[in-house]
Amino acid sequence: MTEIRTNWTKEEIAVIYHSPLLDLVYRAATIHRENKDYSEVQISSLLSIKTGGCPEDCSYCPQAARYHTDLEVQALMSVEQVTDAAKNAKNAGASRLCMGAAWREVRDNRDFDKVIEMVSSVNALDMEVCCTLGMLTESQAQRLADAGLYAYNHNLDTSEEDYKRIITTRTYDDRLNTIDNVRKAKLTVCSGGIIGLGESVEDRISMLKTLSTMSKHPESVPVNALVPVKGTPLADQPRVSVWEMVRMIATARIIMPKTVVRLSAGRTEMSMTDQAFCFMAGANSIFAGDKLLTTPNPSFNEDMQMFELLGLKPREAFKNGRPSKESVAV
Image (cartoon, one colour):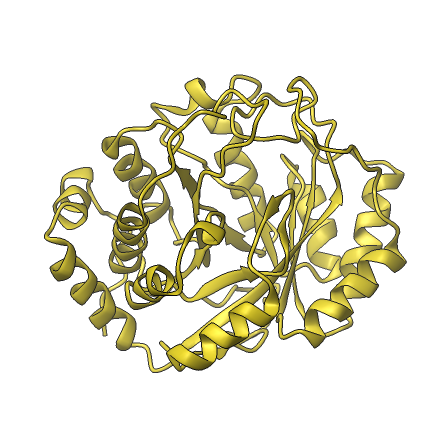
């Protein structure tokens, strides 16, 4: 089996990333097939439990209060609404529910108490529960873990060198500190990035180095293609080609062999052939349902037709075991 390494250099990753495309995909597919479950793709459902009004200035995000987009601000959903949405997602084939709130950071208040209830309620449905709520402390991460949270998403977005161009209201170290707090609570880590922000290839390689040299690889790495939104600073960014997505996914698969690589935002612009290349290159998770927080996404029915044609099958929840207080399965 492929060795798990946490000492990758930028130079090594660059050689992989820039290798001839078909060779790159073949190498990634070979590593992917060393895992007997390569044809399993996890279906996750992403739910915006609190939409808009965020004080951050992430250049790509329509939920930032300072940008004038068509987004309708919505207050925190009720526990009942979230539980119903989770049941619908599970019935449609999802094994993981990701709940996102447009917050800069978690605050110890009634809203967080309500999120704790949501986590407990969805966990009772035997689904993996993931949250993305902004920055959080170690004690807050522990509360989420105690409620049954399986994973916490906190994307790096881009490289450390490029970060200030995209976001000025927090630092790269803030991101890494939150991921450390998630690890301390024995939760699984979901952290990836976005391509198409106007970053260089070197920035992409740098971000992959940061992810692959963590003391433990993130259990989940989303690879997003920017969906430009009118009213945001990056509204006029050209869309990245599918081949750039394939290169990112394949490189991530090679340097983080056991990680679930998530084909995330940008799928509506991809044909089934495009997506098939991404699966071949090592993607083994998608977000399904009509929306990804606030951007369009293919429907469950379309995805099920694609799975049938490509011979893929949904991955069950807790495939690698539930997290314990002692250790988290990779």
